[in-house]
Amino acid sequence: MSGGFGELQDLYGEVILDHNRRPRNFGRLPGASHSAVGHNPLCGDRVEVTLRVEDGRIEEIAFEGVGCAISTASASMMTEALRGKSLAEARCLFERFHALVTGAPTAGGGEVPELGKLAAFAGVGEFPMRVKCATLAWHALQSALASGAATAPPRPAAAPGAGSGPEPEPAAGSAPGGPRRGSSNADNGGASGGR
Ligand code: ZN
Image 1: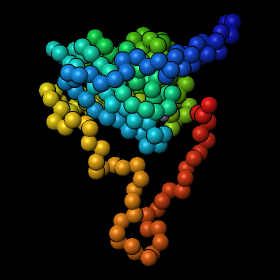
Image 2 (image 1 turned 90 degrees about the horizontal axis):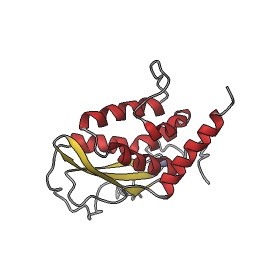
Image 3 (image 1 turned 135 degrees about the vertical axis):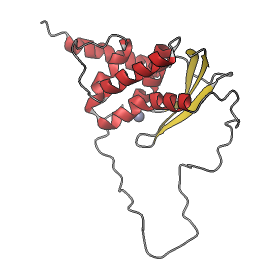
Image 4 (image 1 turned 120 degrees about the vertical axis):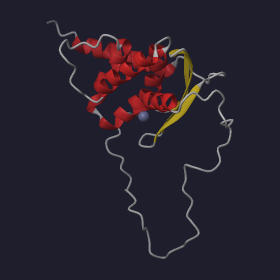
C-alpha cells in the first residue's frame, strides 16, 4: 500500500494529453463504409467518425473534428482500441467504456481487462458534463454502425448549408412579446477544464 495511486492518475492524465496533442488516426477514410458526425453542444465538441467494415470487422477507423482535450483524446484512443476489432467486440468495449465514465460499478475484480489505456477516463465520471465529451466519438460510432452499410456516402459532406447553424438568426416573425423561448441563461457552471 504505497500510495502510488496518485502517480497512476498522473500517468493516465499524460496519456490523455498526449492523444490530444497528437491524435491518432486523424482524418477521413477515403473508402469508408460507415460514417457519422457527433456533436456535443454543451462543450462545442464536434467529431466525425469514419470507418471501413469488412466481414463484420473494423478494418480501418479514423476520426476528424475539433473539441476539448477529453473529446479529442477519447476519439483518438477509441480508434486505436477498435481497429481490427469485430463489431461485437466494439459494442462490448463501448458498453464497458460507458460504464467506466458514468461511474457504474465494475463487477468484481475491479479491473476491466479490455479497456487498456481507455481506463484513463475513469475520473471523468466525477464531471457529468465531461461524460458527454468522453463518449461523443463512441456515440458517433454507434450511429455510424446503426446507419447501415452505405457503400457510398450520398452527399459529399462539403455542404455546410441549412441545418444546425451556430448562430440562430432571428426569424421574421418579429413578435413584440420579448423572449418567448425559455432561453437558458448562460449556464457556464464550473468550467474548470480550461488551461
Ligand atoms: Zn468537450
